[in-house]
Length: 354
Image 1 (cartoon, rainbow, N blue to C red):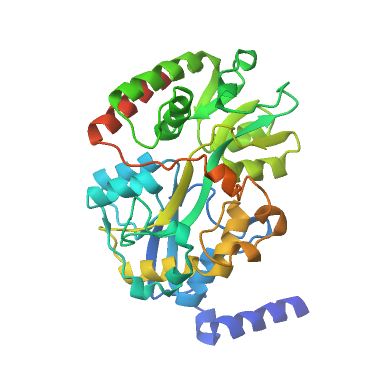
Image 2: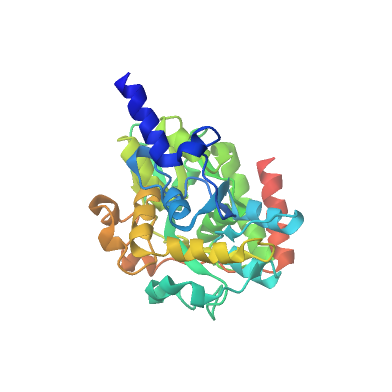
């Protein structure tokens, strides 16, 4: 009986006597639609900080949060549908494409006071040289993860994904840009920007690999590797760190050749309905303490000054999360390629996977 009375008192204090007979559901002053990669925000799971809830509580703006698997999924949705997303978080080369096709709008940086805290390295980047359209969200590199109970010799570079001894046990990106980048490196082609002839070289390399693979995947990599169902996979190094903490059999590797250094940034689509709310969200996510909590959860590197020092020591000290400068010097950043070449690569990859 005391418990019931206590609960009633709590409800009365929280919602008010009148609301008790109606509804205690929170009424928001507005809402925003956020479209982000899967497994890519701190949402309160496993004791993490729920940054979306904190934003909603502080600004009284409801966040409708949705996920995608690849930059191409995001592009197709913005290009072909009547979408009304307010914040999207694409990668470098896709941002360049979205700017070129007038699908995202210039930001009002007077509403993003925390932008001054963004590291110099992540300003004036090739995809947004005048800092007009983007605020960086996270950065990292691609890497390899392998199961030491299934793989005899520790892999050193990308060629390990063509290991015939692991036939039927390896995974590969179902994302064309990442898959082709690996093949291009092994063919001596610069994956940053390329020609149709370069695509042909990489296509031959990927066709050579196909009979050795178990499947092409993206987010499924987590389950496949963490449940000891596959022996090796390429993926994003920060995610590999998470996999290794969930399964002691897994080991992460930064390929000796170097890899893709990518930067995912927050943008506002031209079709956004709540532009002011979108600016508030971007500014909120760029606070050092919020960025730190977010990166602790997704185990990527923060582009915000002071965030790393606030992160969990194990996460911040991992070379999978924060690769050393000597490794970053060997990495490349994707650039937008001509539509004709891009479409050609997409078509070739669909043929390979089918």
